[in-house]
Image (tube, rainbow, N blue to C red; front, top):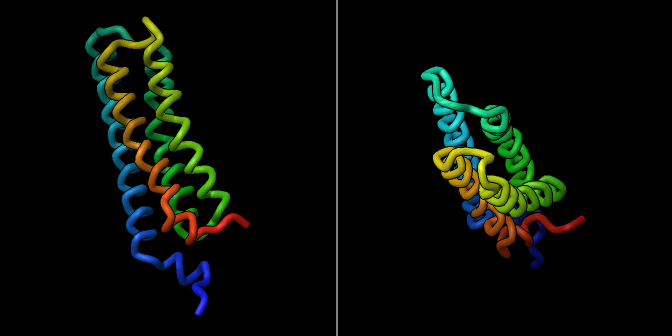
Length: 140
């Protein structure tokens, strides 16, 4: 008896992978909100803040629900959504950390918080490449 893509998609390992991916994105968003809150407090108490800190501080929490929606679509069997979240989860941590390492672009505390939020996305790059996920959502 052959297993169809629909039957495979209900596989508990696939569900667990996407459940963990959603938790990682929730953590990404939470750290993003914390980072933005710290920027707000620092700026309101007279400490230096840059447009870079504000822009990225707003983008990360705003990006979390978008990535979560893409992940939910991927969990539902959408291959394009799977490919998107897989690509973002691979490239984003590298890009964020590389930019944060540019001397003088942001204070160390900010780079650490942003790096932590980007690292929260990294497991998704691995989870979306597991055999359970790739067999559940085959390339069209």
